[in-house]
Amino acid sequence: MNEGPDLYRYLVKELAQLDLVYLHIMHLGDDNLLQDIRSIWQNPLLVNRAGRTLEDLSVDLDRGLADVVPVGVWSLANPDLVERLQQGAPLNEADPTTFFGLGSKGYTDYPTLEELKSQEGQH
Image 1 (cartoon, rainbow, N blue to C red):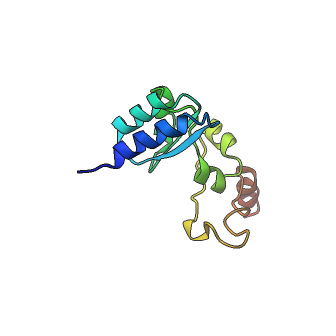
Image 2: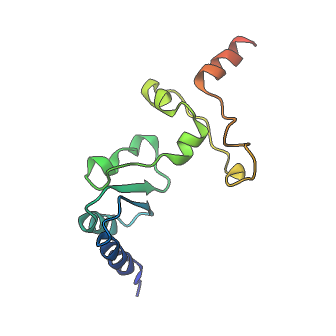
């Protein structure tokens, strides 16, 4: 028997009593569990849906299952993420081999759209 979902329901119920500012969860596909967590947790809920595409970015917001949609990896690799989303511009791919490294590589060296256009103009 898989007790994981019931354990999460219990934990979220207990956490809710602490009136924490928010809860950030990694959603791995159990939509029933997510709906239950949403009904238990009344404060802001951040739902990070593994493998989500840009087209599905707002699905949990639209369904009322999340208050915030984390975009950590996309924002890491795209310092101008909002501008790219507004323009429908392509996104830089994040390099997971640099995650949690001990230096700035992969954290401060992704090009912006402006930098890419400037580089294209030089060729």
